[in-house]
Length: 499
Image (cartoon, rainbow, N blue to C red):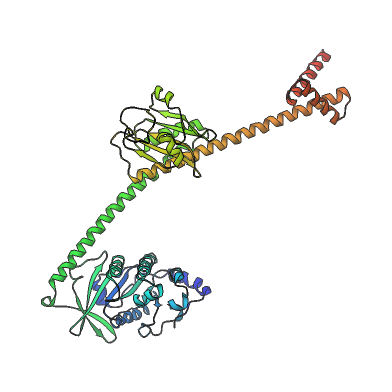
């Protein structure tokens, strides 16, 4: 038992397992299913118990159930302590950690590949986490492995059983595992009886869920029975209910935070789409800058007082190319600044968005500009990590951007920078096309003039061309201009002859 499945078989098997339904998920113990309300796809169920002997019956029940439904069961074997409980399981349904992962550093990657081969909707039974710690080498790596594997199992909608032995791990490890697991079951032995007590069941709650239940064996399979109220530890039960209330409160807070984040993200994406559509409407630089101003001021909801400097890479100067709401005196005084000078020059140098809440107190603000109190947001305009310019704003004094706003400014700056780069490329391309057109026209003129010289002076083609070159040098003329004068003279001569 326990070998690595052949890779050729892996590809064949994965598509089959991904089609399995998850409607048959169960622990194989009806009374435990009822206690948990349901077993959900993606549940990692941790059994916190004194000995592995108490784990075996739960594993047997799960194996018995898996043979009646399409969902397969796989055994993650470390020390082989569950082989007796999982007798009859095929080699292809066993991941032998020792045999498959001779290099502990590659264990996580190998195991992820195995799980993805098995596909969705499987039962995954682990040997003790103590044995896994021996393979990985430390408690820290064990915690990392558990958290990452739980996330992967959740994505694959699998059910996982994890045995966590008491007195074997520090409190920090137990707390991390409990925090990550969907279901955490505490098992204890008292007076010869075994008790199971759900400590955590994420997203589910019932009046009796967190009350301890007695476990008894019906043949080889465990069953649960409720405990009379007079035997219950009400203090412990109340503490568990309080912990559940705290969990529900944390879930609510998490949902509210996720909602705020989603709304912020939708706002950012809408703004980015609006800006990109606007700056993509033209390839002319001045039109791009004008369009960008209007749209950016609209989507970021700032006062209409802003400007754009473009960088002259040769002189390392920033030149004011567009502005809104700035006085003529300001434009005259601040139309050109050096890279590294004042806030705009600093942003051109660093390539990072900058916010200054009080420019009068900011030592980086070295140019007077507006003497009255004001705030600044300065955004680099970048393309492929190269700064092409900066856009600056004068928000109202109470404005304070949040991290999402700063990210949005940076993304907008990248979009405008890309549009500027496209306009520059278009201008260079158009200039080259015009130069080529002029060169072609000049060549046509030279060819026509050369034909006239050849026929007029009875010269060969090379002789006629050399004659034209000498005449152009002697007259300090371009060859194209000389050709045009020859053609015009010839046309005038023709008109005289015709008359």
